[in-house]
Image (cartoon, rainbow, N blue to C red; front, side, top):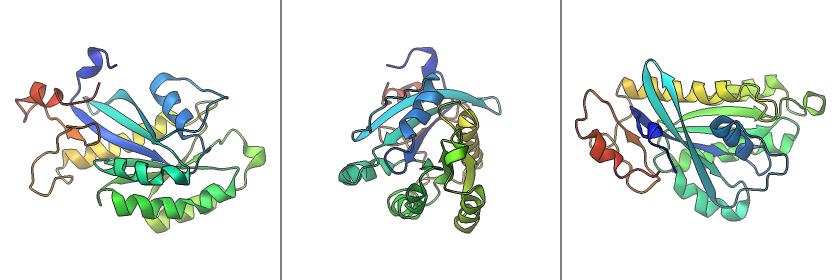
Length: 218
């Protein structure tokens, strides 16, 4: 349950974590939101989410981060949760080449189901296991240049670049939204009503901020 201070924010962005099972999505989420890491973590069933607020350009950005299951049998369930997402971290394991090979399929699925303006970052996780690396940084960077993605390598185990990965994508989303590039089809600001959409609140323009927050998940 969100505490009271956590309800005080200027913008709320929905971000999804996607990628093969076992690449470390859940630990990236727990490291960023609770600064925790679990060596015995089990595969995510369906979808889970957590929230955390950060400061960007003097604004409080609350991230609602959804961790999606990587197994094929959950694909029909998780694809529905792409709706309303304005950011995605596409995660692979730098020690398992197959998880990198599957990135292209995940990217296609994301682009098929998510908003066309979604901000996407490729994340090579488990950078602490350099001695087991099977995916070169250069190959990942080349793929990102071709697909127009940002790229970063992280380690949920030792916290390397985890904060940076989330900060970067949330900052990029904020800059897009603040320039009014992300709009709904009718030109109005989207509102959260069922835990799967995004709410964008601007103190200076939305006098009914409190009412809009009333529909948000806690």
